[in-house]
Length: 73
Image: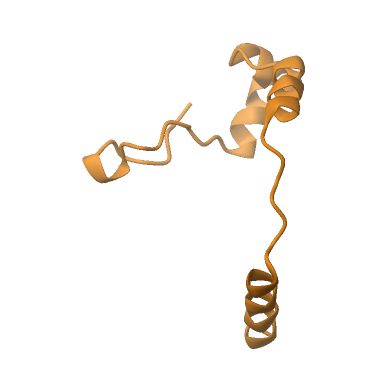
């Protein structure tokens, strides 16, 4: 696996590597890649179940986002 960040102090908070689609395909696809890297669906399901509930946008945040969308057209 290659890492998409350097290990300078400014970047040291990053702990996850990035992987290209080509690397996943070379490993034999997503399932094979997950097995080779020690990841599995059950861990993902558990992590998602235990994750905090997302908080909805406040009215102020929502209005700000709508304005950004209009300005970015």
